[in-house]
Amino acid sequence: MSLLQISTEDKSVKPSISFSPEAKAKFEKILTLYPPGTQAPLLPVLHLAQEEFGYLSLEVQEYIAELMNLPVTTVHEVVSFYTLFKKEPTGKYWVQVCTNLSCTLRGCEKIVDYISRKLGIQVGETTPDKKFTLTTVECLCACEMAPMMQINEDYYGYLTEARVDEILDNLK
Amino acid sequence: MAELVLTKNFGVPDFHTIEGYIRCGGYEGLKKTLEEFTPDQVIEEVKKSNLRGLGGAGFSTGMKWSFVPKDSSKPKYLVINADEGEPGTFKDRYLLEKAPHMLIEGAVIAAYAVGIHTAYVYIRGEYVKPARILQNAIEEAYAHGFLGKNILGKGFDLDMIIHRGAGAYICGEETGLLESLEGKKGWPRLKPPFPAIVGLFKCPTVVNNVETLSQLPHIMKNGAAWFANICQGAPKCGGTRIFSVSGHVNRPGIYELPLTVTLREIIYDHAGGIPGGKKLKAVIPGGSSAPVLTADEIDVKMDFDSLMAAKTMGGSGGVIVMDEDTCMVKALYVLAKFYAHESCGQCTPCREGTGWIAKILYRLVHGDGRPGDPDTLKSVADNIAGNTICPFGDGAAWPVQSFVKKFRSEFEYHAKERKCDVLKT
Image (cartoon, rainbow over all chains, first blue to last red; front, side, top):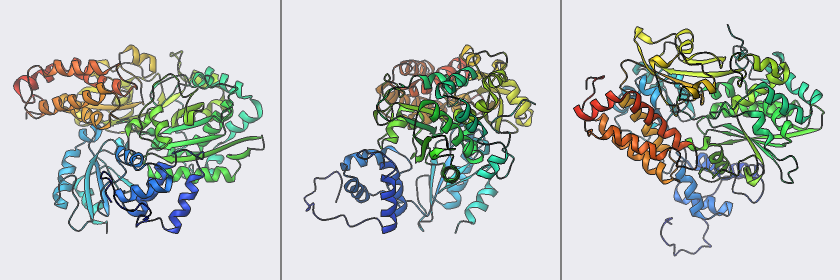
């Protein structure tokens, strides 16, 4: 079911995805943290959905909309506004190299080039084995360790080609 | 060596735990506050301390609190701005990881002063590790009676909830942050009304930065006069702040110093000067939005008022240092790309203007400049500044205006010769 087309499907058909019981419990907990009747739980719920489903496909967005009793367009508007919400799947490791000023002054362009050559992909692409996705990113506020990058949840700084080798080769 | 307030115990390995924090004198400021001060007296004490907002605006913290109506029938909220995002700034990350209990203690003091019982910590989504450390600290604080019901048996209640952002610089702007906390895209609100009157969920709200709140335990423990006196010679400033220093320096990192330190001292005495003995060319003194200073403007003191007099700003305290081999056109392009990416799209001058600026700079950097480009850059920036709902537009325009004005010849060279005189490309 596509978001931007008029659906002719029977609305009583439930989306084919749903939270696991553990995720559902986390969802219920999130709702208690905000005043009832507000849309405030949406960001934490979307983080939870991304953790659960890997990325926020239109199907997931529709599921969340139904779960929170919000228009799908509202959910889509929020998902598309924030860079951490993945609209497409990434590889197992999402490598984001900072290219803001402090990292540029410290040579991040060479690091981006090196990772790109090492992985054999351009910025914005995923390796064929779905292990790595490479993107650039705006300031991650770790400029003291420039040039730096984030891989999934972790920061890695003081990057050199040798250090990049060490980091990426150790990711299984 | 100047007195350290916030970072004094950063070397204590378990300072982030409640045991380590209490062993170093933690939560004594809160005890004293709840035992000896009425809420109004806390506000007065903080006003006297000259504490000013360390997120970027530099507004008097006590004054900001005093705008919250005392007789509100609605609940009031404290929102802790941990959405650190200003390029060149990383001090809040250190505070969150090394001293989460200092933030919690400060937040309880602020909440007590204003009569607030719910606090949300809005932390940038990329800060997964800091959020985890803070969550652990919050749970410890609940278990030890520093959060929750009847704090320290004094009848005051406060709940604290972490809310993760999801990657949007604009959410560091306090009303963009409130929108995001309400589950929406982070479009800043028209002010007035200010959040103190109509904030989170349309209720009176105090929004304070991590570093600002982390100062409060020390102010309450040692007194307003002690704090104000740290900044001798700057009558409207108090205490220290943590400067984040990056770029072309030998020792990039955080440096906690009185606001009366000079930019020269930060670069040469603390951060170890420029690598390879190169000459300094330019410095951004207060995060990427602050107008740039040239090498002969660095004897300025780093307090908010002195920097304003030098036509720049204290901002977030992020000092970005550029040596003589830096191409200023390229440096500005990098910043312009950031502002174009992060403009939320609400106001036309900013949404369109930041994109135009980035495009013009792209062609200047890539040997495709046109003779009128420096003037066009200035014109577009002039038409953004002051014409938008939030200060993002100003923050995007100021670097352009200051870079083009102070390094005009480099921009002219790129525009006319279609190459770079600095990088020889």
